[in-house]
Image 1 (cartoon, helix red, strand yellow):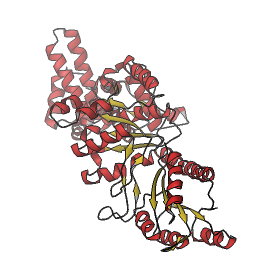
Image 2 (cartoon, helix red, strand yellow):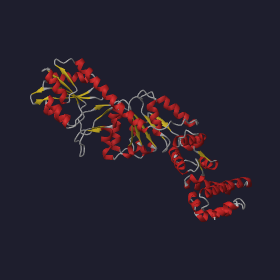
Image 3 (cartoon, helix red, strand yellow):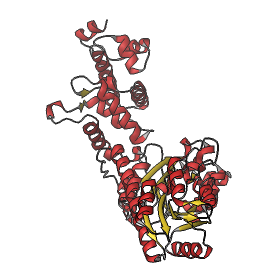
Image 4 (cartoon, one colour):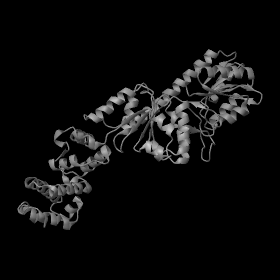
Length: 467
């Protein structure tokens, strides 16, 4: 069913009701007005898409109504319906801002045909807006994971995408829930429709209902114009509700009604609107636990989680880490010349591969991007990595050395730590204070670690440069 909302304006009750019935039967939501005054009040709310409007009425003229609506910024499409057919009135109506003109006796098939044309054109406009947004927000080509956990996610996406099933994506922050939602949309029959994303935690609570369902003009202080909500904007497409667990309870109730009935009511409107919008939701919260705490509706959870996809954390995808790092390097620092391509030295790569990545893919993107900015001679070294990451690697090395009873392993770990220290000092041009800052340790700690290392490992040149 289309979300087009039609207002029939005519002072003849029988004709008005028959025309409204024909419009409703064609699948459009419809309202009626018996004259200019009543129509003006209903049009002022701004939620009428098309008005089938008589010209000659006892309390005014339909053409004047069109002019006043255009002057007020109301974007309703007018089709004038009149028994006083003449070229002059047709031209006058079109000049006033009407889009079309039909004469009585009305052929209802013709009216429905005109409405379907307007609906199709409106849909194209929404798709074009969505396409422009997609192009402006477009990201580089996605990395194809080969780890079993992500292959399973890919399989599930392929299964659920062709359906209209509501999907709940769960996983830690930075695991790619938004990317997965877009993949579901792009592999679905709705791929040519809009894909709209909203972060539920980022919208102020008092604006959520208006943001989701829209509002009429004057619905609340500051509502100077009618606004379509996200569900109507995404009609025929997909809406991605990120951080769904942060929705306040009153909004959960309204969302549940939309999920069950496929209809919404804009704030300030008396008219229910049908919508055909698929919901993909995501959260990093434990929704079952929130249900038990009384912070999330159990019935809404069951509705949203008809099909769940759990995204694994990056630490569970170790086999993909080297390939993902090189993929990010190519996309964050693209180069057509192979000699200018950014590389990672072996020691920095060891630290990156050993890192637990609590922030997942998003954290890796940030670390690689920062390192590319700091890197000299197109090579990322230990000194280009965040101090907290180096400190963690150093602590892990020391801990491993302490619990090891194998002298050979202890020596290997000490050499590994020595290499980190040397590289940091070289990267700081011999400035030990700067090297300590980059390593995230105090200067005294740097000296102590150097003293703990076997003598002779630092060359004279290094020692002199570090003084």
